[in-house]
Length: 238
Image 1 (cartoon, rainbow, N blue to C red):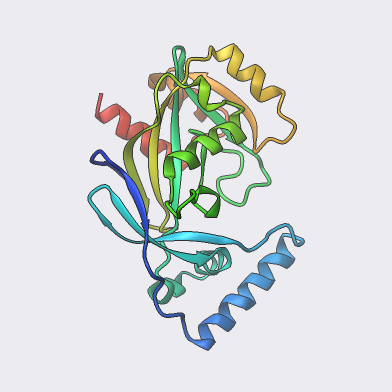
Image 2: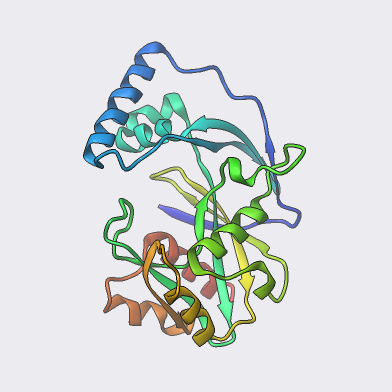
């Protein structure tokens, strides 16, 4: 189940100490799953560091650093969740143009929601979001994802990103800070910029009226569960 709820103003991400490491047996299980995943993906997967939510106090997310392969193992074997308790923190965006909302179709090679349409951009909060002095900047992360996935620079925004909601996935245990992104580009300009990208995470982009998007995209593979939940949340709030 995916739930979406409003966030109070002043969103921040604060790092806290990591919990005690799991047992040697659990670490062996993680390594075995990771090795199997590497074989399954022909080595096209690398380990890294992610931030997992320990708790949330209002608009403040308390996070600790973990390894990406721990989350892959937990995702492959949900019985690891009571031990690892990983809740990766991510960002998602709702990009609004004058003509409507931006939707993008995920490549078939993606392991999650292949071929489905979603509201871009999105991505995990990782070490790249750490600023000088150690602060973790979720807003900087969504801006980086916007440029990387849609070729839209921060200068194209009408206003700074607004942290509008929190989305929680009870199956994968991912928690997203959802940002509203108002972009001054026309639909044709955005689509041209996307088409010119050399490396694309998505295979197609469309700009649609939110009221018609679900029905239109249902004929083209449908929406990801997360984006469907976000659209339902937006519709309920008017």
